[in-house]
Image 1 (cartoon, rainbow, N blue to C red):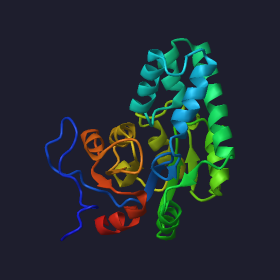
Image 2: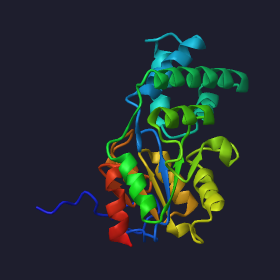
Image 3: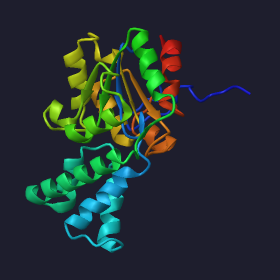
Length: 250
């Protein structure tokens, strides 16, 4: 039986003509972290629970359940943006975000974050083939660095970006992808950018940036249908399959 895991999807999001999106040469690869290259094992939810409790949201209450559901629905978005929506004022949002980042950092320091199997090897292979790799996140820089340190990934990619590095706007805005495009100078055409992530917002940010390949992975928050509906040109079981996909598409 033919393995179709890496076969491009031919159904796309709103406004699609049904024709598969053409892929570029993929010389710049922009990879999400949590859920895509990093397996956090539900640490986002655990850190949110601590942050919410810090602001007086009782665990197990309807308010807590509603807020947690919003966090899950917006996975991939800048966390400070999520807290602005949930708590209404800048002061409360910043307090919640600080509590979240502290809690997440403690969980990372406790050794509860691991790499997605094959992620490091995939990044190393992409770079060995001459591609430029950027790692992006919706977390603050301090949390991103804590994760990179915990995994021994400092220097693994050519560039690491958080929302603050891109003017403060995280996904689903295209800013981090376009910042990687501008900072690296790896390609002259945004259609030669590859964006990879596990959430609807990753797919939207890639499409809005004009990336030629927007690949969803099934190791994180959202399922195949959600990824395709929001613009995935390909859906992979894991980022480990990405190097082969790009070689086939070259």
